[in-house]
Length: 290
Image (tube, rainbow, N blue to C red):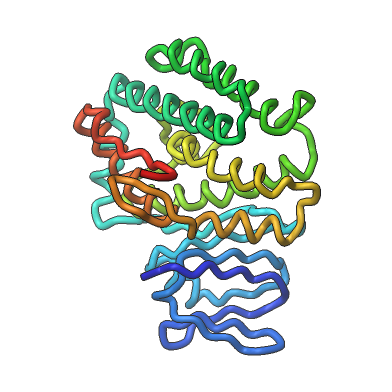
């Protein structure tokens, strides 16, 4: 069972030995690859052997590399995540527009519902406004209730002067957490044989992760909840550790308690089934409690 999240915060050499990750710095630490879910390489002074990278890709272990500011920069992905990738991609290209739009509508409904839930949890009465937006959502969200809900939601959580485009500790924390979640969606989608470039709604030619950006929307609220709880005043190591640890948190999906990592796998698989079978009832959304 993969459960460990490994963060490389200082200069080190990472190598492979007998199916173990070997971390060499002042000391030598060895971790069985079978235990590792995610590796975050924060230090740009870290060297990684090609043998280890190949094995990490084969085992579909999520690996995120950070830039000189220790912010997530890119992840390690396989060219081919599944034995039938060619077939899956051909199917993906021919998904019906109606089916994609129907699934996107359900994703947006669920995202706003979870935003509403977080506001109510914290006694913020503007959750009633999100109730209104939920009632007004049309097919494909053509009236952009998602955008209106987001403005009310973030201003309610972090203050009326808050803007998602500003540079501040709260936005830095949110962006870090979202990127970690996005990396999990990238890994999961690729491992199932699909391409992250072809989205349901997102269609930016410069975005390699259009599909991941679509599917992750309801999971953003997991990051929002933690940032709100921490009352972030400074974007530091403590915040980063908390954001990464979200992956090991437990939530409910399909009637069972699962880690966030496992829940993402179940959810993504259900979305693909819903699209291919043209049945939105097949989508399995998570809940914080039963």
